[in-house]
View 1 (spheres, rainbow, N blue to C red):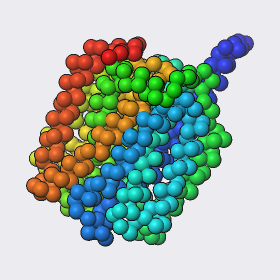
View 2 (view 1 turned 45 degrees about the vertical axis):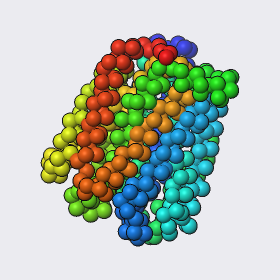
View 3 (view 1 turned 60 degrees about the horizontal axis):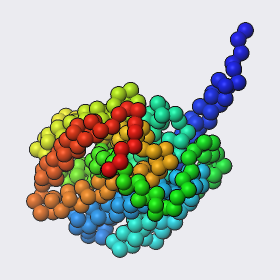
Length: 410
């Protein structure tokens, strides 16, 4: 009878522990993204109650996005230094404050909603905590899939889409906010007890400013930022603005529009780890190229506002799958190419770019519709931006990076 060697037992234990860390981190990402997306499903209701313009409605759902995006830069650098075991509970606890404020006090005026939405953006910074945390637990040949699985936590926006309006109808405006705050509190305590940083994770010793400056000198930082601004930015933009778009362009009810948005989100979530897994097998640039081609085609088709069934539905679901796979491929690229002790910093900058990519389109779409009463121009712009990202991927990223990954400096 054969027995396992001590080395194989240690590797099995490490693999099992890595899986547990990935699961807890992914849950944390989903819970914080749930909080981050609380305003979007209620935007139409707040618009009607407060008499907001289309631009003000777009601003309302975009503010948490931009704050959560820019906040990823310092949070990612802090995670490199202090680790996810500290940062996950800290960010989760901090997010409880704006959630309770919005539910109990801050929903009676646009100014109050914007203040609450600003600090609600804290929840969106958890992405920059999880990527370096997960990356340190897995070997290079499994990082694309692992980071992709973690990225599936962005499905927290689907939880918000499916439950927020129903909870308000069943109770009152405060109900979904109080529930989310309670879940955040439970997760903060649980993550403190369960999470542990990888034993051999690299800890930078340089000051924060010096590390950020070094990060900005990496070619991969700028390449991945541009690509993620389109891939994840497109996902965020649709996840926050799709209900308003479907209601205005197709006359759907608020509940029907929210359910369709949830379907878009869920498909993108499922495809994110698929994109990471494919990137472990083939070059991430190839996965990105295929994804961007689909986005260009889908945006062009939807610019003509075809019938929702089946053409519009197919176009949106195809874009959801492509944006999810492209997001997973982008961070597979980061995991393969970025220096190990700078993954958090690079993630922060790239994640900020992705969030900002999601901030701009809702404002553009709202402004365009307010002026022309048509979304066609906005969708054409999406197609053009995706085509430019495709060109960058083919000409620069595909030629200047390899699957094995080397940090390429500007």
